[in-house]
Amino acid sequence: LSVDQLEEARRALDAPLFADLAGDAEVSFEFFPPKTEKMAQTLWQSIQTLAPLGPRFVSVTYGAGGSTRERTHATVARIQRETPLNAAAHLTCVEASKDEINQVAEEYWAAGVRHIVALRGDPPSEGAKFQARPDGYQNAADLVAGLKRLHPFEISVAAYPECHPDSADQAADLDNLKRKLDAGANRAITQFFFSPEAFFNFRDAAAAAGIDAEIVPGILPVSNVAQTRKFAGMCGAQIPAWMDRLFDGLDDHPDARKLIAATVAAEMVRKLYAGGVRHFHFYTLNRAELSFAICHLLGLRANGAKVEAAA
Ligand code: FAD
Image 1 (tube, protein in one colour):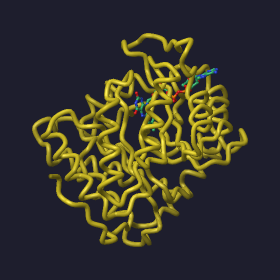
Image 2: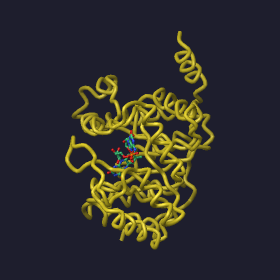
Image 3: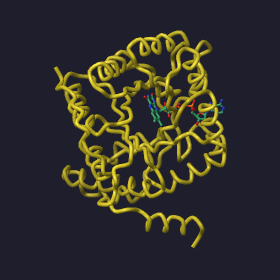
Image 4: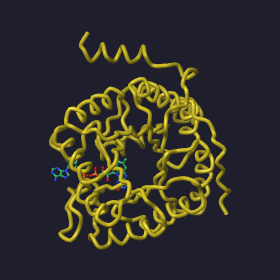
């Protein structure tokens, strides 16, 4: 056995049973801004379900090229205003001038929002190469520095356990992550992944590269492999073959797919916990059920915080 295999076996043995988890993990939840009234209701119901778990923060994504600028702002501002949650706004610098981005950030600050997830973003046309605007922020590190010049925002940035497609190799990717943290970011949240070992290797490589900031794993409970595969291709995440096998033949069995999704994600979270992870970021896709169930397995319980029903 290699050292890695021995280490993996040790972690598997150390992994506590869910029954023994003390509830000492922290979580955060990611949502996307709703397009319709019906979607807004689903989102708000999800927030009502997840809020009592006392997440460290909840974040709202920013559509490609700033396409959801108003909707992201409205959603974040509403969470900040109407719930006890700490709301974070995603912000990208693609296709926008520094002045435009700074304006958006100022509006967040005025609305009481103190946490930004600062990202470069992807080019609007699929497969195109990212081109910074001459009057814009050049990349996420540049954006972090710009935001810090405006206000003392708390800032999270993106990290890629399986490497970002634009980076030459992991060393270049880690250099880039270090630039973002050196520019003032507080933590990194990872792209989703399905191999705990990929996360641990990345965390070790980051530590060896002198990165000591918190690296929070992004957990995507998957119940639709085809959809996830489409997205994974663009963002440097791998879908293992076993995932296809697990969902094979379940197209007409949505309940079975959900049970399997929860089991796969729960198993991964348990292995990550055994490897020392105590903060998990859930890509909820605006549905509370799976994330709520996994948090429950992690030992989290409602703290009594209530969020009023959507008007
Ligand atoms: P950067 O960190 O700027 O860089 C991306 C890659 O380019 C780096 O890995 C690096 O290898 C290379 N690079 C950058 N600068 C340099 C340099 N100076 N020299 C050499 N190489 C360089 N997208 C959205 O549109 N909206 C969202 O709300 C959103 N939320 C996200 C949340 C999380 C947690 C994650 C992980 C991703 C999210 N994304 C979102 C996707 C993200 O915008 C894309 O992955 C994008 O392609 C890269 O953004 P970044 O902030 O990682 O970019």
